[in-house]
Length: 77
Image (cartoon, rainbow, N blue to C red; front, side, top):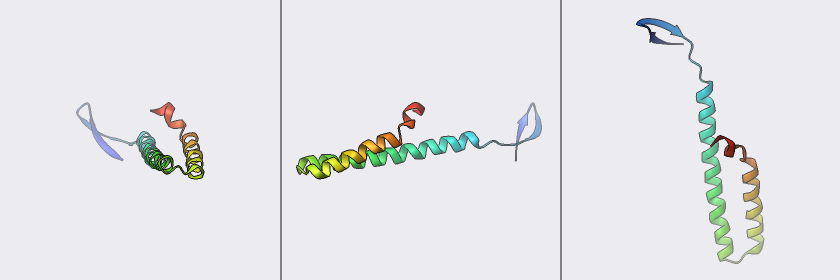
C-alpha cells in the first residue's frame, strides 16, 4: 500500500498494478516478436542467397506461424 497526498492530507490508497502488468506483458511480447521476426527474415534472406529451397520453405512456414501467433499485437499497437 502506498500513500500519496490528496488535497493536502496524507491518505492511504491501494496501488493497482494491473495496468502496469498488462503494459509490461505487451512490451515483452513485442520484443520477442520483433526479435524472432528479424532473425527469421535474416535467415530467409540467407536461404535465398544460397538458393536453398528446402530451408527457405521451412523458414517461411516458421515466419507465417510467427505472424499468426502474434497477430493480437496488431490490434494493440
